Length: 125
Image (tube, rainbow, N blue to C red; front, top):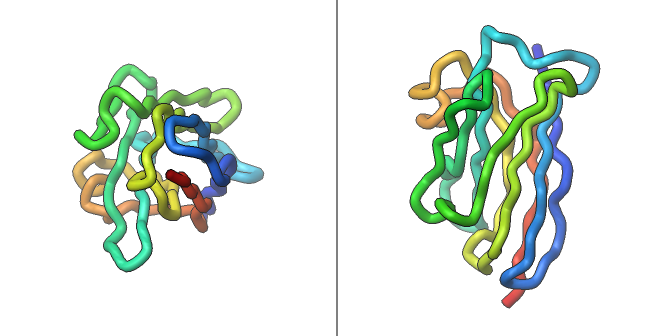
């Protein structure tokens, strides 16, 4: 059972930036789960899909609230996927989870095969 690990969360002021990383400790991302994405969960709210990227990195999928502010990239040689978050807002606060899936539809529906434990992002106003 592949576990994902997230890094890079923290406390930042509104307007600031953070870069989250998602990796697979001791393993490599598999072409069988080519889509890797990020979800977030704010206190008292449901987990929501934020962004995803395909295996080659040629396609990214961003939800409207983060378009123009967040970008995704990946380095398969390092088995790492990144979420660059710029112009952060207090409403971006939450626990950010990394997930991987064979199909983008499953990933977006939070039906991913593999999940990380999450990393806290807090944006102060």
